[in-house]
Image 1 (cartoon, rainbow over the protein chains, first blue to last red):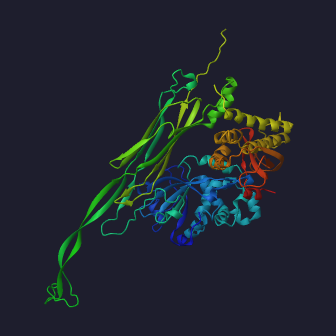
Image 2 (image 1 turned 90 degrees about the vertical axis):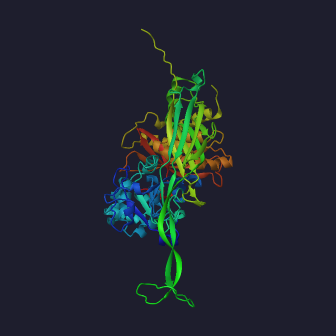
Image 3 (image 1 turned 30 degrees about the horizontal axis):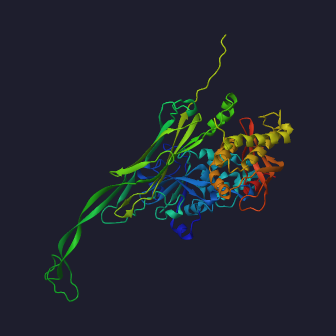
Length: 441
Length: 172
């Protein structure tokens, strides 16, 4: 991501060190009085989850995530973020460890360098974070001999963030990169860095993750309280429902297979706005040119010095709470035999059963074996599908994956929130009966 | 039970890669595994892992399909290497699929580049690779690949290809 100059001047992106192993741990941040982090973290360094809009997980195709391969090929990786929005329209971005690592490797392209300069903290917090993530993999002896300034690791990490030092040169080993890929599988489990983009909602095309799920509605200053948006997190489920212990169809005379139930529940986007209620009142206003005075503007006036007129004044703010649907527009579900189960079939099982092989390792459940149906009622939108009698022919564990896209919420012809991309995963077991011959004594 | 092409080809590719390595480097057999100090025999195992990983990675069989390709790679790679490449191999496969190509590689030479004194159980191997035909959009079918192999639970396995930045930063 290259940040345009105009955006750099208006958007402050702040990097915060956070050892956020899960939501209950405090992040390492101080929320002083004037800091924009005050909307994000409390005085104890905890994220203010109750005051943030959870925008969920977002992935984007970023060129700086690409890994060069031999023969001019590239491994096209996606940047992955979990994001929150403040009521003021700032966006908090929590990248996966692999994404943060690639941002450090490409500080200019990813906007990390810009974030640093705008923060004006000399890279201190960014350095601390990178040190926590990658410090164990650096050859500090060799680095210290090369540049004594780097005896202080923060100096080295600052140089990396500012694009002055190539971190690739100083690794003690190189297995860390793929290890980060393992760490990045689970959303929110190991997101250790926070990026704050002031006015990120208004400039969502320029921030990591783009505009997916961003709350658009501008909270314009009005006489009545500003409107607000509250979003609850959707619940997604994909699981096997029957039978209790599915048997591979090759051993089942009934060829029963297994059933998988998929369900999605998207709670309403709650949009609260206030309707100004005006009342017409009589006033004595200033005289206009050529007008004849017919009233006294104040008690101290001894003669008519104003013109009788009427005007509207605000007498009430009528609150409206709208439960806006965010309907499901697409739903896909798949089942995939795990690598461990495949290895077990090909190695262990095939050594005992000569003909054991992989029959069918993946299934497109929805669409494919079944269709989904959905709708909205009272602002809550649901979608579901029952995939019956899936003909699993291989024993082992199957990863179940569910991906959903929503339309976003709108009100009175205006889009209030952006469409959301949601996902969920599950796992199920398919059984096989193995026969063992026992020689009786 | 019925057999299909994918079922036959997948183990065959891995088996052939393994046989090629074993016949090319007889020192592999009977070598000692798991030692922290690299021995010549252990180097042979590391080299075999590098060659096997690169061979499987560049064995592109459109008929066998993407899943078979990824699966065969994951069977010879480290767990983390498998997870890492899985994040992007689907997009890469689309390029192969669009070009309707099938490719087999030949490892022309191999050379140990470095180990990491502070991180035992990692080696970098330089491989000269020739493909049976150029990849889509490329004129040359030969290239140099720097591969990282890692000792995982006592077995040398292919982890990943190094990037040019990493190669430039390797200890001299």
